[in-house]
Length: 212
Image: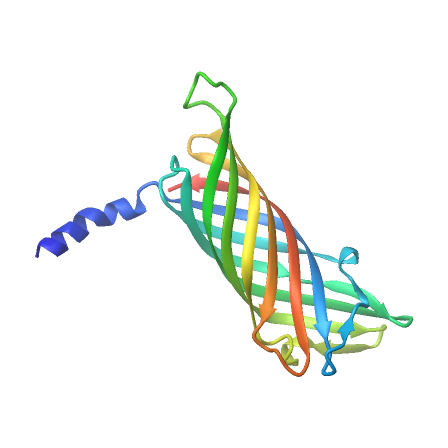
């Protein structure tokens, strides 16, 4: 009975000061491909094709705290283009992922150093993990042949890997802040043979965060 009363008293505190955020980003991805002979293919240029990402996060912890935990969903495109001899190859993929991270606020810039409640700019760094799954994708060879990547084992596994990010939170009004973030992820692939594909992802994003 005492444990139940304690839990009921604690329950509202679990939701107090939480925040929700939404971000949109530009993605540059790199494909690291090895064939069944363990040979690396370097015909894809990550700088020639970009994608977009949409993210929604829930943060746990008081907004005034220096540290917090966040988790959420991400939609992202991991695209690439290149050439094999003179034949163009174009990859267009769409993934859904679950992401979680531990955030730290190592430094805060006060616009008015004599006013603790005035506009602030917080430097945010985070480290976490992400698991992703393809739900749509095509490989186009030349201008004729198109392959469904969701049918290819090397693309249809689970992607997983660490996520590192750094960015800024800028106070706007009330309990709302503007976000500007840089994210990097290296995705390993649960499908490891005979052909293997790993992914590197760079992303710049902007967004809004609001306390609940």
